[in-house]
Each structure stands twice: as C-alpha cells, then as structure tokens.
Length: 57
Image 1: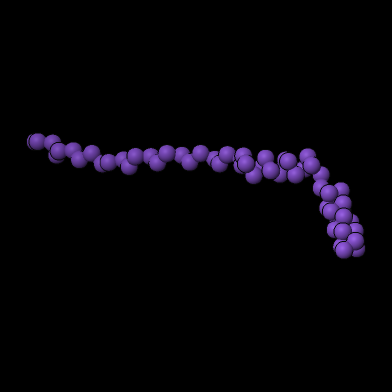
Image 2 (image 1 turned 30 degrees about the horizontal axis):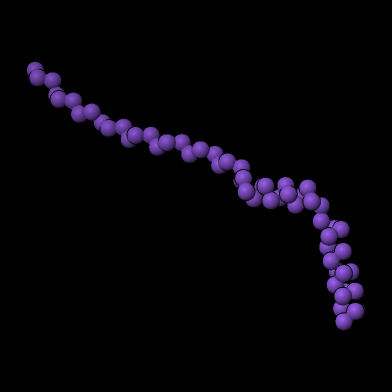
C-alpha cells in the first residue's frame, strides 16, 4: 500500500509542476468569450421593374 501511495504522489507532483496556471486560465477565458463573428450584411431588397404605359399618340 505504501508503494501505491508513493507512486500516486510522484504522478501528482509531475502533473502539477507542468501546468502553467496563467496559460490554463487564458485558455479557459478564450473558451468563454470567443471572438465576435463578422456581421452579415443585410440582404438588399430586390429591385422591381417599373412598367410604364406606352405613350398615347
């Protein structure tokens, strides 16, 4: 049982020493607030042809 605890302590200390807390926090913030998407331009209304009456002669 003592060897199990020794191995677990060794593994935990390795993972804790490798993590940079600021980098992890920045990555967390990046996931929370993604960059805004470009706004989509509103669709232009379709232009309608104006039918003119033929001139009376």
